[in-house]
Length: 228
Image 1: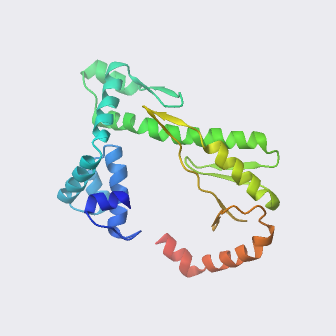
Image 2: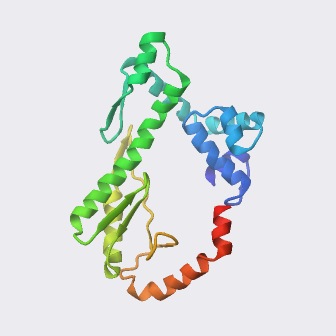
Image 3: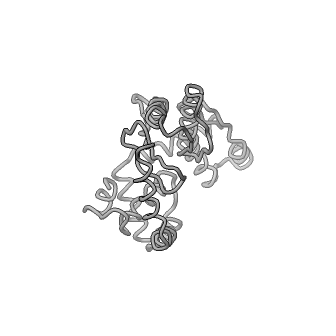
């Protein structure tokens, strides 16, 4: 919402067309997508895409400085290291530089994506495994890059959620600052739909209300609207 306000100069309604365009702009600008591709993905003209990207870069000039630092790191040493210590050597990019003396746009974009795209699952994996080691009743089922699915007894809901929140609060050094990614948790008997966890300790007395919620959400109309 904040970025939509910065881009369009006025507040927008959540999930409106401008809201969606603002979200698409974040991804496009952060990962150095050009106006041609952004225009296609957002369903807008190239001129409008250039204007929106220009506004976003003006709002956050540090982004282009980060892009330039990433490119220089690939040109000079051919590798990047995430804030949590994972190292990647960019062999293809190094070969380009050695053979042609330059770095392609595709290799540059791949390098830009590496640290943010690698750091998020590293945080998630560490938090998941710490919680799994602490709670002998917890089952790990799925890791989805920035989300995970676990199962626990109904009466251990609160304990599990509290430990997940604590274990996922991993400090990420970012220059002179430290970033901690916020954690959101939802619970349910099924993977979908779930409800937001709001500090409940035991899910047992909530199951009847949850099943009512499921019946309301899993109607043909709701499912069709979500898939549209």
